Every structure is written in structure tokens, then in C-alpha cells.
Amino acid sequence: MPASIQFANKKGLYLSSKGARNIGLNIVNVPKVQVKIAKVYENNLLNYFRTNRYEDYKENANGEWGPSGSFNYSDDEQGDLSDVLVKKTVETADLPKVRGVSALNLALPDQNNNFRGVYLVSVDSKDEAYLQASQLVSVSDIGLVARQTKNEVLVWANSIRTAEPIQGVEVTLVSSNNQSVYTLTTDGSGFAKFDKVTEKAPGFKIALLTARTSDDFNFLFLPDTQVETSRFEVEGKYDNESGFDAFVYGDRDIYRPGETIHFNTVIRAQDWKSVGEIPVLIRVLTPNGRELRAFRKTTNAQGAVATDVPLNPAAVTGSYSIEVLNANNVLLTSQSVSVEEFVPDRIKVDVLTDKTSYKSGQTITLSATAMNLFGPPASDRAYEIELQLKRKAFAPKGFEDYDFAIPNGASPAPGDATSKQDVFPKEVRQGRTNANGQATEKFPISGLYQDIGLLEAKLFVTVFDENGRPVNRLRRLDVLTQDTFFGVRLPDRYVATNAPLPLNLSRLIQ
Image (tube, rainbow, N blue to C red; front, top):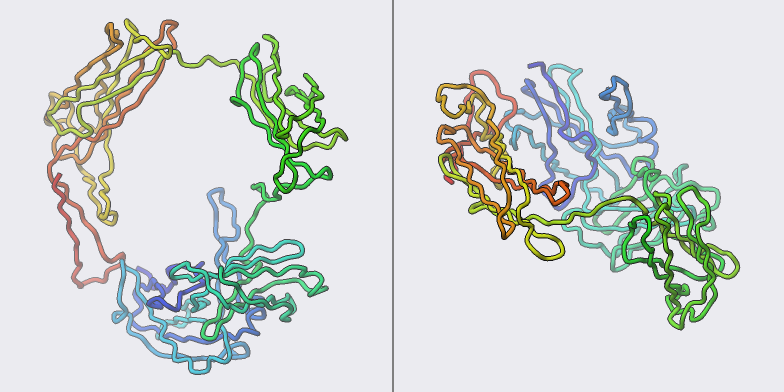
């Protein structure tokens, strides 16, 4: 394979200082690498982000090129923004491997902790200069989450390793022109609220957050961590000028033409206290926006009022809107309900099998019970039951890394032990329920299904009501075609020639 050096996670940036401090590397056919670790200081972070990195691009499924969300970092060759702490040559064979990924330990002999910063890790081939990879790494246990609004910044600091809140973290807002403009300390819940940012830092645009304790440092570069919210409702609830808040609920949210819509309206003040008796206007709008009904009512002593809206049997179907306004026509809230032509199920069907898993040669016994929703059994109803078999991946818990598949396994057709088809015939049974609304069918599993792994049996049960409308149920079962399953796991993704290849085998007995 062609020689290459890559970091296992190009988007990774934060590494907990309380962990093993290992970084994953994918190294192929490079016997020796030169490792260099340089410290980029706190006051040089913005400059480094703007001049020493570029975003990686990749081709999408439509053949178009666009940002991949990861960055390529370049070395600070002049040393203007950083100092070199470690420079050594490492034999790649000496690096420990975890599932084929080489683990590079960041042993940092950094004695001068008065100048905080992050680390630029560069791995180069000793013989081929063009084979190299660089990654910016922040070794810290301070995890930061921030939310920025127009005039405030909310910051939460938690341990990366334990997720516990960290108290006493000094958080600083850094502007886009590299000025520290606002500093606070987190409370007992690891929270700091920067309010009135435009007043306390007029004319500055916040670009970076830094967090420090007596022995730790971390940062958050805001342009890289923005979350696109155009697809979500994040504006929250707006207060109206009346100072009231209303809530509308009904017995259900879908009705048929000719029925009556029942709903209740509860009005509260901003402090959640009852507003007592006040006049309100309730409007019901049709799907085309026209007003169907309008009610002028007065709430009771608890600030609630009930409303009934009868629908015409020829009413327009669609989404109706209920609007609640105060006496000054200020909209307090709105709620939508659906008016649709639908027919509910008249019967319910319960399906049971004698076991949840079977083996080849056994028989599946299925019992179905159909009951009318108004009480008596659904007797003398036509039913249809279909059995389908298909392959299913065997992936037991705790053995996710093992492969139990049988690539050349063949599923013989019943009656033909030499067939190499992978097609399982369907079985369909039809009949009518007895006086108790019950139906029982047996499906024998062919004994020819042997040593082809795990199969999934799907039982589709359909019972027809007195008008011929079907009610469907599905039941899934496991079919074991062998008593013992063998799995294989390869610990390494890449192996060299003339080298032993270790194999991990697992045997599970059902």
C-alpha cells in the first residue's frame, strides 16, 4: 500500500488532561517518524487560526466539492507564534496499537506554565519529507459550552472526563482584534453569564473564549463552533403587551366533519397567577383563512373558559386554527386542530406465539385473537397469515467487533438439499376466526435450514372486519440454524508482509 501519515480524527481538537493523553495515528509503510510538539501561546491563537490553517474540502455524493468541516494545520516554521517543546524520532513499530490505530502519547515536559497555550503536533516521515501531518491539540479537562445572543454570552464549564461542573474557572471574552474585553468566574454550577456585552465592550466583536484555572487552560473559537439554527425554532416565546399568557387544549386534536370540537382556554399572568374574570375573543379559522366562528366570552374565577364548536357535515377538511385574543384584540395564543375524513379500526388483534425463538425443524405455533372494540369477540372474520424468512445479522452484545457472517452460506429450498438458492419460500394461511374470535396456525420450519447463521421470521397477521377493512399486526421471531456461532476479529487494519497476523476467535453456544 502507498505510504501515508494521517491523524485518526482530523476534527478532534480537545484531549482531556486527566486521561491517557494518547492521539490516534494511521501510519502505513513509514518505519520512522519525527515527532515535533510546539506550544502555541494564548495571545497568538487568533493569529494562528487566521494564517496557519485552511479548511479541507471533499467531494459529496452529487460530485460537488465543498467544506468537509475539518482543517489542515501548517507548521509554525519561523517560531513567531510558538515554541518547540519536543522533537524526537520514533520507530512506528514501537507505537502501541489499538484496533489498528497507532497511539502517540503526548508526554509534555512543559515547565513554564505561566504562559498558557495549546499544542501543535507534527508527525513527519524521517526519509520522505512530503509525508507529514499536523494537528492542533488542546490538552485540558475544561469542557466549554457557550451560547451567544445579541447582548449576552452564556458559558458552562464542565470536566471533559467526568462531566461534573467546574467552579472557579476564569472565563475571558476575547475580541476579533485580540483584546480581552470581559472576564468572569464560574459559579458552583460551572456557569458564567456575561450580560450587557455591547455596553461593557462597545465596538468589539467576540471571537474567542479562554478559560483558565490555577493549573489548566482551554479555549473555544466561536467561528468554528457555531450551530446552524435556521431549521429549528430557537426564538423562544415572546411576551405580548397585555401581560397575559394563554394555553388551549382539547379532548383530541383531530375531528370528523359533523362532530363538535371541544376545547378549553386557560389564561394566566406572567407570574402564573390566575387573571380571574376577563373578557376574551375566541376565533376559529378554516384552512383557507376564513373565520368560521367567533365567540366573545368571559373567563371564570380560575381564568378558564370552555368552548364548543359544532362542525357542519360538509365542513372543509384540513387544519383549523383556534385564536385567543384579549378585549383589545391582542393575540395571546393559537392552536391548530385537524378536521379529516377517517374511519377508526373496529377491531383489535392480539398475536401470541408459543416461543420467541426457534430452531430448524421446530414448528411455530401462532394464536391470534380478534375483539370488537365495543366488547364481544370478532367471530367468523376472515384472516390471512403470512410467514417470511430472511437472513439476519448475528451481533450479540459485547461482541460488536466480531464478524459472525457466513459469506458462502447457502439456504437450501425445502426438499432440495443441494440447492444453492438464498431465497426462502413464503407460506400463507387463510381461514376464519372461531366463535371466540381466535385463530391458530402452525408453521413448521424446514430441517434443511442448517448452518446458515441466524434467520428472522416475520409473521404478518391480517384480520378483516365486517366491512372488509384490514387490521394488520407483525411479529418478529429468531430462527437459529446452528447451535454454535463462530466469530472472527482482526485486531489490525493494515499488516505488513512476512509478519504474523493475530486472529481473535469467539464461539457462542446458544
